[in-house]
Image (cartoon, rainbow, N blue to C red; front, side, top):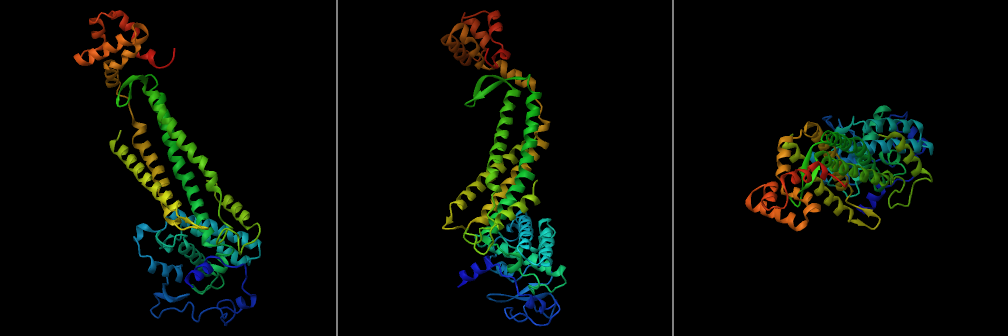
Length: 442
């Protein structure tokens, strides 16, 4: 029975309340209450600090200063996990505001009372702008489809709209959280839609700008260091020379590749589940609803310090952990529904925020201030035994290898060893071993 009630709450039919029922509702010119409402549905507690509301399981006290309702209170009772730090990420709540506004606009096109639709849109705008964040107390650790958060949003928008229209909080009249705010929707399509909206916005407003800033700073350093020659390192050992600019150009390209991969993934994020309702079939919605909602959503959104290195690498470790959690969550789709969605979007948004912020911090507090220690670079390069590679075309691999091994064993330089072994003169060494001539093909 409980599952049946949950499914009923998730997906509401396209049935408008009879005009007569609305006209006789409290606060709308009449005194009678429709028969389908529980008696005293929004009865105020005597101490005036709570109002009494009902869900399908009974009576609940709801704080008078909150716009959420009975179903949200019920969730706070059933999922006391983690506290304030584990609340649903704010970007998800804001994304819900965008979605609910878009749905109200489309539902108005399909016959929803313009007065009700406009009130919903105004309330949804406040949610999207973050003005009502204090009214969303639910944690990520809840029903895996995000049902409680969807209902939290429906209740907040409903009550805020009711307040705008001069009605009584908790009465569900004239704006019902399910029949109006959630019209043609289900938690099973609204939550994944909000996930995608939130992820897309976070990527475009935080992650990509942060990476672009890092890319540009590294690119500037690559050009600044173009004439500084240093010894390369492979297998944690000295290799052949390259410029410090060439080395930094590798970092530039890696960040560029990362941005390209992120942008390549975005078309799948732009696909929205809105209109699929409970199991993806579109039950209880209208033909064209999904496309119109997606269009509305699109219109509403087009948008030299070691400690810094340590912070960046710790962020990378956290993001790797988040990725594992998202992967495990993604593997737990059963039949028509994945029930790990709140945890997945929490981790995706967490990663996007961490990477974006860390990129900006790393750029501003480290990359832009990097300076080349040319004295040290030149010393390490000139003392490197790997410069012997330049001798291969002139004296052959075997003699060059013997010079390097002998120099390493005796703790001497390549030049000293080559002359002692009689393989070449000092003039020949200076002519053939020039790091600047070893930077690329001839």
